Amino acid sequence: MRIASATLLLLLTLSAAHAQPEGVEVSPKGGRFKVRFPGKPKETTAKTKTAVGEATVTTVTYATPEGSIYVATHIEYPTTPKADDHLTFLAGARDGIVGKDGKLVSEAPVSHGPDKLAGREVVVDKGKVQVRYRLFFKENRLYQIGALGTGAFVTGKAASDFLDSFEFVK
Image (tube, rainbow, N blue to C red; front, side, top):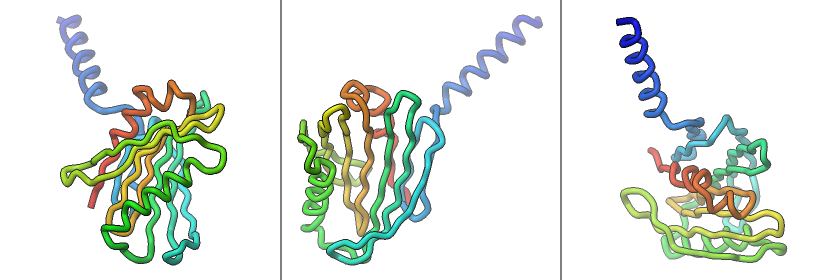
C-alpha cells in the first residue's frame, strides 16, 4: 500500500510539474503583454526622443550562462499613428536591428493573437551573433521580442518557445 501511495504521489507531482511551463512569466507594467522567460529577467525603463516625440522604452532581458539573450521590448509613443504608418515603424525597427554592422538573413510576415495582428519576423547576422526578432505595432506601441546568440540558438526550440509565449493582455 505504501508503494502504491508513493507512486501515486510521484505521478501527481510529475503531472503538476509538467503542467506548469518552466520559467518566469513577465508582464511589464503598462506593457499590455506577457512573455515567459527561462529565468528571472532584468527590467529597465528609459525615455528617448523620437521623430514623433518623447517615447518610453521598457526592456526586459535574460542572459543564459551560455551567453544567449532573450529580450522583450515595448516602446510607447506619445501619439497613436495612423494604421498606414505601422509598416513604417516596423521597417524602422528592422533597420535599427540590422544597423550598420548587420546583414538581413530573412524577413517574413507573421501574425499574432486572435485578431491576427500583422507583424514581421527578422533574422539578422551580426558576425559572431545572430538575432531573431518578432516585431508588432499595436495602438501606440512597438513590440520587439527577440533572441540573440548562435544561429542554432536563435532558430532553435528554446528561442521559438520564448517567441511563441508572447501574448497581448489588457
